[in-house]
Image (cartoon, rainbow, N blue to C red; front, side, top):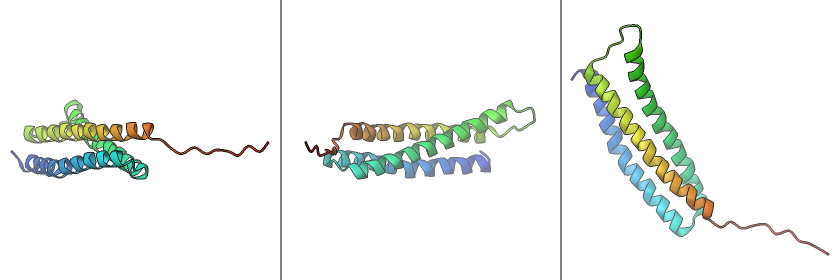
Length: 126
C-alpha cells in the first residue's frame, strides 16, 4: 500500500469512528424528541439531518465520480490499486452513512407530519 492509499484509509476509518456515534446519538435524540413531542427541536434536527444527508451523499458521489473519471480518461491518470480501493471504500461508506442519515430524517419527517399543531380560529361576529 502506498502513502496515498494509507492516508485515504486513515481518513475513511477516522470518518467512520466519528460518524457512527454521531448517527446513533441523532437517532436517540429523534426518538426522545418524538416521545416528548418537542416540535421545534424536531424541526431543527430535521434540518441538521438533511444537511448531513447532502454532505455524505456529495462526498460519496464525488469519490465514485473520481474513480470513474480515472478509468474513463483519455489520458493516463492511472492511480495505484490501493488508492482506488481506498476511494471505493470511502465512497461506499459515505453513501451508507447518507442512507442512515436519511432514515433518521424520514423518521423525524413522519412524526412532524402527524404531530398536531394548533389552528387559528377566526372570530365570527354575527
